[in-house]
Figure 1 (tube, rainbow, N blue to C red):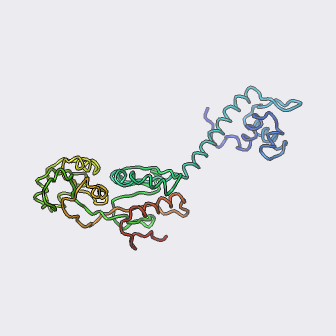
Figure 2 (spheres, one colour):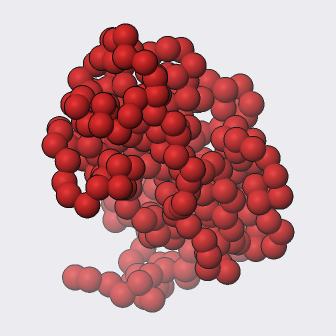
Length: 301
């Protein structure tokens, strides 16, 4: 038989019953709950009247559970334990921060900086969601997102430019060999091309037709192929700067200035932002903002 939630016993009565059943004493229950023995007895009687069953046998000294009371106590205790666990987990989750980033941002920028994040924000629990999909902050329970996008942004969002999407074609130095740099567009097109879902090569070469070469659904895979000497990939320079500095990749042509969209960090405006979210937000801006300027500073409310 299903019982409406509105007909459930009062919480105070259930609490008085649970403590009384555990201690087998209205007096001890009153001491634990900070009320009088009579108040506990009254709450237990209210519960018995509500469900129409005797839960305790009143003895000259103390009380004893009836068989129905003992069975009920087991279930009620389990229910209170579940509520306690749920509350504890909620408090733990409130200190965690969920950041949604693109897969390439995750592998090329975020993961290499996790040690620095842990050092700067010890004890921080950062949960990462790597996806190209647009995040719904409430539905997806996302606190911060990094996306390739462009302004204007809704008034309900706070956004800050992290870096421009400046595109550069890169390849392994073993693939290029002794060819003098920078390569001409014709020389690049004679090499194997590695395309990703953004398909930047036609725009880079001002070409209307499709270009040959392997196609990957993620930029990170195209970069892995480039690092393995399989061809030329074209990507946002920020994602490969560490590889360029280390000599694992070389820029085979000049970087093209960004015409947008660019990489922004975004979050939903709230009346009382959590300190943990603020800390990660500020750390991300300090870590990945390439050229601090007025447009990079955190906007006011």
